[in-house]
Image 1 (cartoon, rainbow, N blue to C red):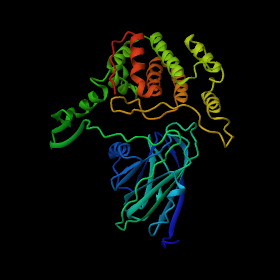
Image 2 (tube, helix red, strand yellow; image 1 turned 120 degrees about the horizontal axis):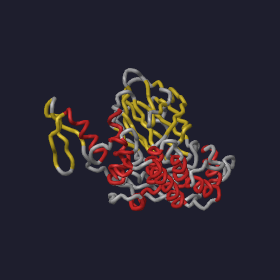
Image 3 (cartoon, rainbow, N blue to C red; image 1 turned 135 degrees about the horizontal axis):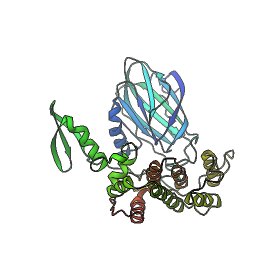
Image 4 (tube, rainbow, N blue to C red; image 1 turned 90 degrees about the horizontal axis):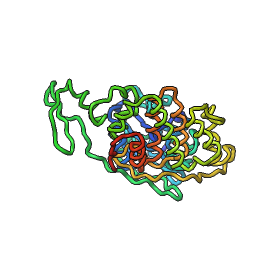
Length: 393
């Protein structure tokens, strides 16, 4: 090795990575700070660190069997950046427990990796990417490597991002000012600050204030048990209130309509096997094969979109929805494989609980529409009697 550095420890772990991100923590990190790191990572892709944790964005939406090799070196290791599609460097501290943890939301963890306590430079490299967003499978095969070596005060090398053929590199997303809790005046009061100014709120009322912010008003009692309902209400309050008052037949009709709209947008509604499912769904009948087993249905979609799974030369040819990600449209999460999300809407529409079916089908259909989600909400609101006016991003 030309630089004289030696590899001391190596371990390979597997992570169930989802939501296009994972976090590396040496024991000093604060889980509550990860959302801030996520905003910073989107603002300056592909990662963000604060010395206690490093959040890394993956081009892939998911990889449920993501292989990560963790290496510890006694000095800066050889530079092999040209062998990797994405590379980033940061500083990271490891506490007295001597372990490196790697996690991905919502609560997936890889095995802890032993790393001696101390201050390190860390390099995270990934390769084997097929697309930004949905990779066409839950196991796309991308691999990652983490290298750590003692922090000698040297400069960090610049980030390297994957330039996807035919797509390029995603744009950074500026951090919005947003509403944050800050500056405790005393134990009874909190100052809330946003772009419009500040207000003092009793600490005991803070939870209720946060809930009102999350829901775009008072929480809707009928929807509180549904995880995605607050996001729907914040985006289109009148439609959310209308859903809360709907009877079961109307809820079923709304869920089915979302399935049709999502499949039409994704360009799969006219495929015979999908059309047969949509017809059965609209008539309230059990769905035909392959929808008796959704894993089989998704496998058929994957084969049609990307070719046989055993064909190592298969290429991504599907059209991805363009992203104009903005804080006012939470459904525009970046490039997604619309057919996959549209098929998921059919799955949600079959939920035994009518309210769950309507909420989850609408939410997933909105993600399918992405930047055009306001169009979906306007159409659904018009069809189902809501005077909603969704926000424009």
